[in-house]
Length: 594
Image 1 (cartoon, rainbow, N blue to C red):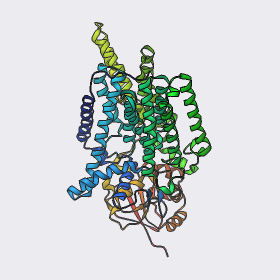
Image 2: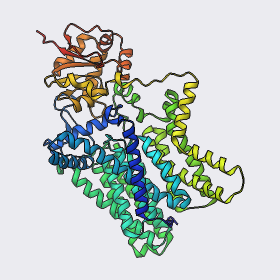
Image 3: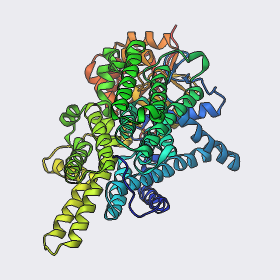
Image 4: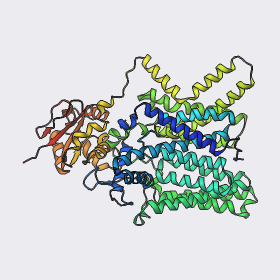
């Protein structure tokens, strides 16, 4: 039975603790001088999201997801969801109307988005922790989960990418399935899953696990749990339909896209949701375990048949068709897209921060469930396992595995607190202190950094002052007449966000043409680069010496244009603009050719 009674403690209690944790994290960011606002730290997605929101506010159509200022002439269509753009744009418009300044609206929005989301995520984490553990778990859950959410960085001010809302929705769905009762809880969980899917396809494994959990409730539970399962199906299908109509233009309803919410994802969600709801409310099926199992098997076969026959292309590796050049020079360098073994070999210090606590949590939670079975604990185990497996494939899964691991480890610490309170053993307190220490993910990150320093390993990360990630680095570029800029892909989003120019390259898999043109220009000879520049009406070439992508491309093509710029040997058709030596961004104007 998956329903678990919530221990004493109300939603209001946990909401207040969630808000306190979010404000504590905000205070820590303030004490540090809001570093995530002063320096981009490679957060290109948040910068491009801001550009999309500005375009929407500026009059670009709701259904028009073209990024006209990136890529070849005409731009390309992004795969992100307007469901994230809309609430942030609303905050900006309201504050701008009150203050008369768009910049003030944007400043308020980056706080109004991340801080409430973290408060909600922490509230849901505490509700789950109450079901997995008991009152002894709450204080550890507050500390460990707050630390996990804070140090993950996804709720840092300025982070308006979609990962934070996806994590919050995932925790909301788990909470509704574990804590809630009846149709309303099921509808809330199903709707949260549909919105997760609509925001981004990387949440598909967690939506699948939540759906299987709802199906298990129907199969193994009693009538209230069947009602919850029915509600889940209704919420998944209903919210899935609403998101489809709200974000997909009618002209594209039958156009499949595997990397964005479209007809394949909606079809599977609708068939699964409606099928589960119909089965769960059917009195004929309710009277027999065999009938319920048969109904679920038939539903599973129907869903699989639709996916395999109608949308087989979406069952392949999402990056299988990526151009080999982009695979080598872009995707293989994106940290969040790296598998476990690559991260471990390239930077074992980062690997410690991504993988140790989830592995520990799986072991601890497994042993705990072996001793004392708990429906909430089993669901947490399923979600944590899915997130950990995803993180082994691509490290981005750690965004989900680390917060889920924190909940499981909080239950472990709670058990030790209770045990220590009942014990007179003088070693109980030191053992509990050790359990506390190893349950904090920051402990493992700090230990890995200390070990790396002791071994004499050098820090690979370059200073922000040299990687061109500060807003001030783009002041001279912003002052130039609008044109198309040739720059490495890492600078594409900052150029759009901090200047009026277009950028040929940007780190997005749909910008195939623009990225390939940029690679060919920078790794080819000066003559080849000039042809690309003329064909694409490029007016400025930007060079950032300290960026890792610059070193990669220059090293791979020592006779190419980028390597020549690194040697301060620009071709005669480039004119360098004078700039303050403190600015790491070198800007070259393309001289008119006869």
